[in-house]
Length: 280
Ligand code: PAF
Image 1 (cartoon, rainbow, N blue to C red):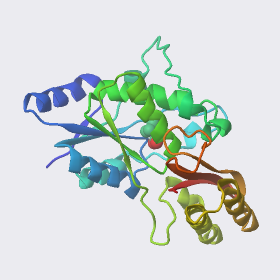
Image 2 (image 1 turned 180 degrees about the horizontal axis):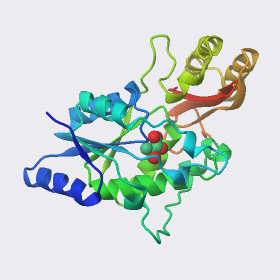
Image 3 (image 1 turned 120 degrees about the vertical axis):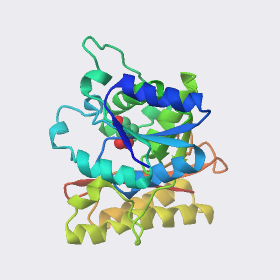
C-alpha cells in the first residue's frame, strides 16, 4: 500500500469522500511531527479500530507561547513520512499554515474544566486554547470516526475528549496507553535532550509515580503519597512542577478515594521537562 500525502483540505476531502462512498471507517492521529514509536503505536491502534488511518503533521503556532521557541521545534518531514508510511498510514495530511489559519482567521476554541485543572495550564496558559482550536479544526476537516491520543499527555487527552463531547463533534476520542522504553521511561521527542546521567535519573519519574499509586491502593492517603513521590524526585535532582492525584476524567481534586484516580507529574531534569502519569 502506498501512503498518500495531501497538503490541502480539498485533496484530503477527495480521499475521505471516497472512503465514505465505500462504507469505510477511518481514524485520525494528530501530530506535530518528530514521529517516534509513541506516534506509530497510535497509528497501530487506529488500524485495529478503523479501515483507514490519516495522520496529520502540523506544528501548531497557536499552542506555543512567545518564549517557547516554535522555530526550534524538530522538523523532519521526509523521516516522519517514512515512519508513518511504514506504520500503515493510508493518508498523511500536511497542511500549510494558510490551510489551517487562512487570512482573517479569528476564532479560538477555549475550554475550562480539565483545561483549567492547574496542571499544564498553570505553566503554559496559552497551550490548551491552541490545542483545542487546532484539534477541533482537524476533527472537522477530517470528519474521522476515531481520534487517537496518547495517555502520556493525559490532560490533553481529557481536554479534547471533553471538547468533542461539548461541541457535539461526531468522533470518538480513544486514549492509547503510554509507550515506554524497556526501563519504563515514557517515549518522548524530548528524551534525546537528556544527558547520559539524566537519562538514568529520568527513570525515577515513572517508578516514583508507580510506587505512589501502589501505596494509595494499599491504603496510604492521597496527599501523603503525592508528597512522598515529590520528595523522592527532588532528592534525585528533579525540579518538580507538580505531582498530584486527580479524578481521572475531570482532573479535579478527588472528593474521595473511590473515584477513578490518576497520579500525574511534571518535573525538570536540567533543561528538559518530563511529564508522566499512572492510573491509581
Ligand atoms: O500532542 C500533540 O502533538 C499536539 O498537541 C497536537 C494534539 C497534535 C495538536 O497540535
